Length: 164
Image 1: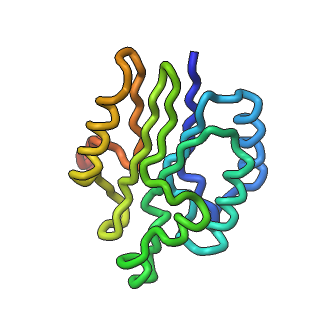
Image 2: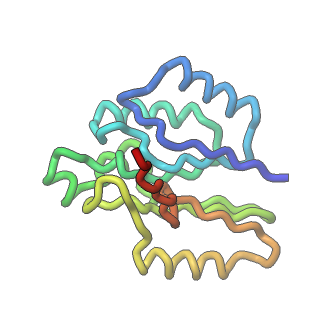
């Protein structure tokens, strides 16, 4: 049996230390086969937030897959947002935007869906889809394939306006 632990939206800069410590202890107690952390490590992609997030990640179980989220792209620094959106992510978290875990029964692929041109949504680019198709095609038959992104592939349904 394989166990995937999935965490997301830690938002360093707005972290609750007792909760963060409890998560570390819980993950260590359960010893997952692989830990997946799917983005939003920071609240506003600031250096101090990235530094804290990077230090925190070193305390979590390995192996692990990490990918950025929309909060990991600078919001207010327009130059950094559009020209260097992942510089701090690469320095403090990971420079691998196609992380993977594989054993004889499981393939977990992570891919970045965060983009500079949107604050909340994300998507896959054609080259990412081509890579994922090629990579999953190389996996042996019978291997469970899991794709991890920060953003959902299908937007949640909109709530109809309530009659008041």
